[in-house]
Image (cartoon, rainbow, N blue to C red; front, side, top):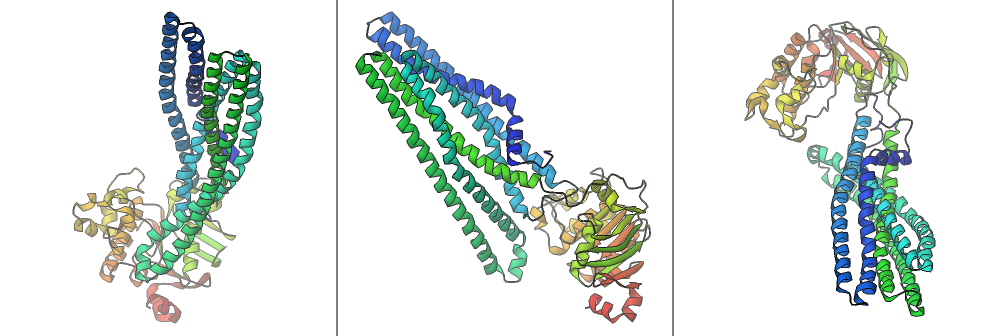
Length: 565
């Protein structure tokens, strides 16, 4: 994990530094390849001067063998270097994806704040790939530079003016290339930002497609995505134009530079300062130089886009945690006493609650926002602005979030299922990944769901469990929460899509299964509330009434309006 608030430069250094061995090996092979390629026109010049001009068959054969050896070495080095270079890019990108995944999955949270899931996915794929490509770009840059140096040395041996022309001309050319790449870097960052947002919106719409169709909001959804996609397209076109201008400008500069080398070489040959073979070698080297310069152009572009992507990755890695890390661990074993004192957060206003170990408490929130904020605080996805929440007398803020969530499981209403078998989904939260799922399946009536499937519990579900109905998904999600068997279970509206008969079965079985565990049911279901020890009513973010369900139904008209509506 990158620490200390990483910057884009930090991300790039880590990505490249982690592959330094591969880069070193690939660079050596790349330099050998470029060196052999640079020597090819030099050898051809020697063939002309020492074999063709003199008519020596022996010299011709010797130089042809040298030329064949050069091609053998350069082709072998190229193949091996390309494989290692591509591997370094993939390994660097893989390392970044692991780092991003660790940040996103950090129990303290924070990475997803203000970002759509699709945007995080785009950063972990597209941006990580671009930053990983900088590892390959470093190898290409070293190889190209080696080719330029070898060419300059060869030209210096033929003619000092030609060699100095390259040695003095390359640095300004590279500096101009760096200046030209700046607009590309800026526009690439905007392009990636818009593309990630479009990806996030698309993922959001696909996830809610069934709901959108149900409320007839398809046109509004399409219009929203069209606007987002249009913005992404405009940013991509601007980046493409910038890339085209960048590549064209660099190509023009290098072309002019190579033409100057050729003209100077021709002038020296006409004056007799160099031989015909040396002129041919100089022209060949001038043409060869186009390759290293184009490679450096490519490297400039990759580094520009890599820096933009590295900045976006650094923003995610530098995201402050949603909650600070605690140092204490819950008591062992966890008794399960949950106490809230004056909790204020979002829609909650000074809420008080005391749930004894092993109790089954119903919580009715007239405002859905209050229910959601309560779940965020109990799961320590957020800490209260005021007040304290305790588990067995220890404030949650003092507990490590990861340890806390092993003791307190918050099952949200919109819990997703995963692609895999029904049983795999139920076992997902179990401590050892195995064990007996029968009691949890029976309590949630998900065993009926399994029996109705072609291959029972081994039937593979589609993404997010879309092959099941809404009620079936809820029952499997409830079974998953129950199978984890936490000391404290907080469940939010687990049966809104379940028929009343099944809901009554779940209420009775849930009480039996959780009789020795603390359970908080945040719901307005009369069937579930009827089986609780007591019900706490939230109105205006604080507790307005408390008692048994039957008593509240008889005495509280506002309660009846919420629960029996």
